[in-house]
Length: 389
Image (tube, rainbow, N blue to C red; front, side):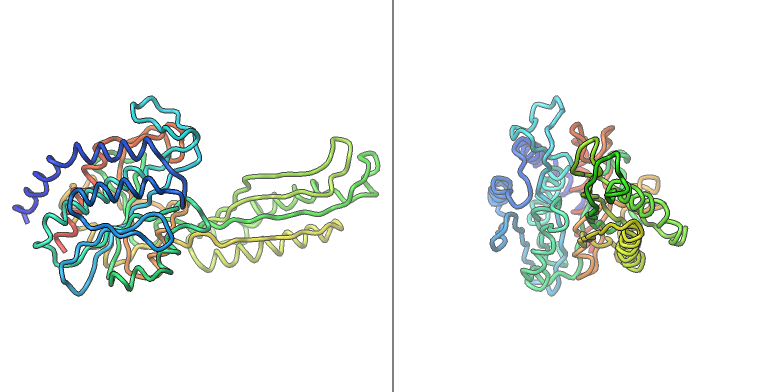
């Protein structure tokens, strides 16, 4: 393995300039979910130039590289390829040229890491004990209709005979050369809800004639954001956050219509089900108590992302030997940020981890910018790990 490690190191030295160029080109031309046409083209052109076969998905952007070693099983690695509707506010020379669209979540880095893994492993395919599939997935940011579920519905797991799959996300709070990982739930479910409160118009000076939808909405918000928490085990993770409130009316009119929008985040199926049920019950009961009505709509988003136990223990052991114990952080709490890699976790043994990128700005910030060294660490770690399997 030491000799292979040296070979990877030499290959990365020769490829890193081109890989960084690919990252810059993708960052310069970001595209939103299900519209990543040029991004897919750039990935395909890069890989084909390196003699790596790339296959498009049926009726979707993105695709996959497949390294066929004539083995019985396939290891998968997934990278998301979409950007966000954010106006970039950095000063880099490869700043987004698509105004109002930005790789503010580091997917340009994920793509580059995945492309690097594909090129390295293809050049060393005689040393692989598994076939390898590198999946470039569209529309991760399109919750609740992200690309992972559609790819799985196309039969990608059976088609490629995936026996396990890996993924990563750049993470601002950790340094380059560090990873964070834990067995079990790593990222929470992320569901969306709207509550439409229906009252009755009246003059503001005669509130007794109307039904105040704003007053009812205030009570509902207070109950589901704060009081509902008292019905849940203190050691269970559950978060209800209100993101929008919209109403009709005028300053001197009792409002008859309010729409509340929010999200539910949990890390257990039972708590998720309970919170969904109680939001509808609480909203209905409060509205009824004050002669109003509600329409509650809760949409299932991404499920809990849960790391496989065996893969977690194996990967942690390998990463500790590779990066050093102090650089493999395992005493972490789950993040409540949603991630559609979670759909793979429900189908096949899966593992996901956070890769340090040392940014002082958070994910989805208009100034978010991972450090370039993140790419090298990601490619080197995953290439060596897959070869060690």
